[in-house]
Amino acid sequence: MIISKTIILGRIIKGSWKSFLILILICVISYFFNEYVLNHYIKFPVIVPGILGPALAFFIGFNNNQAYDRWWEARKIWGGLVNDSRTWARQLVYYTLADSESENELNEIIKRAVYRHIAFLYALKDNLRGEKKKGYKKYLSKEEISVVELESNIHNAILSFQSKDLEYISKKNWIDGFRFIELNRMIVLFCDGMGMSERIKNTVFPPTYTYYTRLFIYFFIISLVFVFSDFVGAWSILFGVFVGYIFLVIHAIGLAILNPFEPTPSGISLDQITRTIEINLLETIGDTDIPEPVKSVKNEYIM
Image (tube, rainbow, N blue to C red; front, side):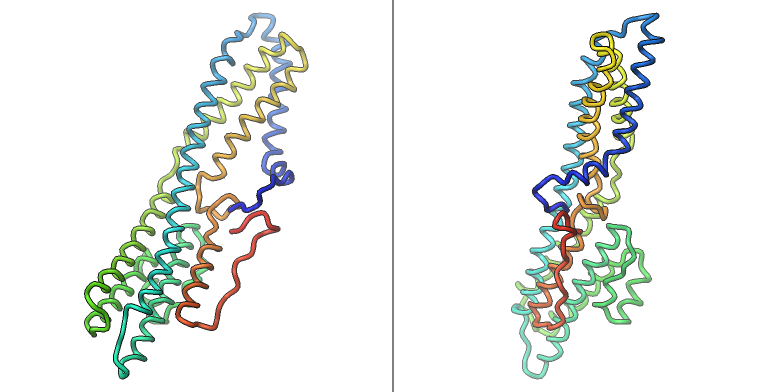
């Protein structure tokens, strides 16, 4: 996720130089085609770019709005996971109570449940980003790893272990009915967040939108050069590049946030969010092995 409030010129050039060169080439070819071929037969109608330009602007705006909605929904989902994760650890610590003989066993279950939740987040992050870092292994026992890795949905399998331990705590009368419901509700919320995240990842934005938008942008640029060349000559190349670059960059901005879970500077900072939750939860149970926060890259973005 981008954290810099300033525009980095180098990143803009790096991300758009290929499109810029293609744009120049298209404008040059269009100008010479109009001068030496098209003008001998017809004058290109001015009304074509006049109609196509506004229509294309609305279409690009629609695409960008849809892309931002996906990005913002993903950010809200993981913001909710941050709050619910902190609540989960706090409720485990303060909602449960055992006698002196069972206190050590309860503390072990609480620690295991907190560790397991961190593993759940790492497994979910791996799935959303298509990675195989398997950071969840650090917080699961060998027996749990052998069980969850047999299933196609590892993070969902981890939640099943959480439900089993919560049921065990209830049977031992270490928690009353109301607080049991509250803790179980947290597991339901984790499942909801997991499902909503998977829905965004697995719902492909129709590729025809991207393909035809870029195709229509190039057609608009060509028609613009045809029209301008009749009025300003070779300067139409410059005007075509200028107007076309604006359209292409606006379109590219939408594409950059279309898949919010991708490990890109404009994506959701899953590494940073997961590490923040990890630190908070370990501190809640008094753990001493606290990892360092994820650092930004050149103060520009954080993954």
